[in-house]
Length: 307
Image 1 (cartoon, helix red, strand yellow):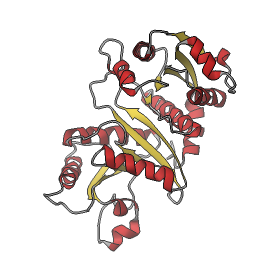
Image 2 (spheres, rainbow, N blue to C red):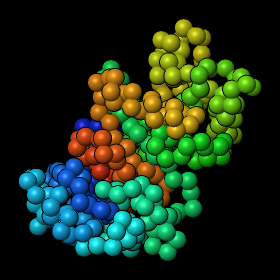
Image 3 (tube, one colour):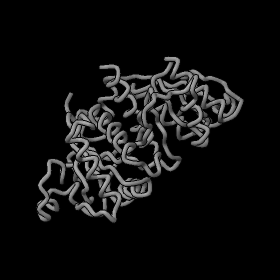
């Protein structure tokens, strides 16, 4: 497939490989219902709505949402029960994607990580933001900005693997991964630079596959070829990065949200590393961002199935 360079292209592609079925935990949320209705109307995804049927109907009232088009799994037992039922629907094969609705993240994750009915894979579960930014000729992936607070070296390697897999499902044949730090030289007093150098070496030795990793790289020379040339950096990644790996959740979260609020952009995100893709959106996310997140999960699910 050709490389998807905008989120609009990604959405269009999702229509060709969809529809998939989403299991929505605690679906009684107007924004979430509008997003799944838009996904249904566009042919990207259908949905099974899990939660209190009365509250779901109340949330849909006054919105352009036709609940008759969805299966509703009535669950009045609370957040934890709804999260577990939604995860079980996916692990049982009735749906291909899990989505977080109106519930606390810790309760949602208990369902995801349940040993018997959840979506444990044995791997590292991480979050990936991805952005279409005005002036860039490609989608930029950022990880981990929402899930793993302070990853160690081994976890960062798994985070890279998750992000590279998602990028490949978007048609990026060999993703270029920049491991970010405040500077582009190794400094023993700056642990992020040591991890970055180690990850680059692990990639060269085949311990991290399917991508090209370099670091440490500062943000400017990771995404700007002019900056990289000015600093004399010779690298396959410098100035051309597809994936930006941040040292910790604070740096990742600030970087991702600064793009949303300071630059003309479109954004979305998914959680990778479980048995199925997970759509975990924020209440502050726009309906468009939720829709793009659903579409990305469909693209990844189709890629896993070899479509």
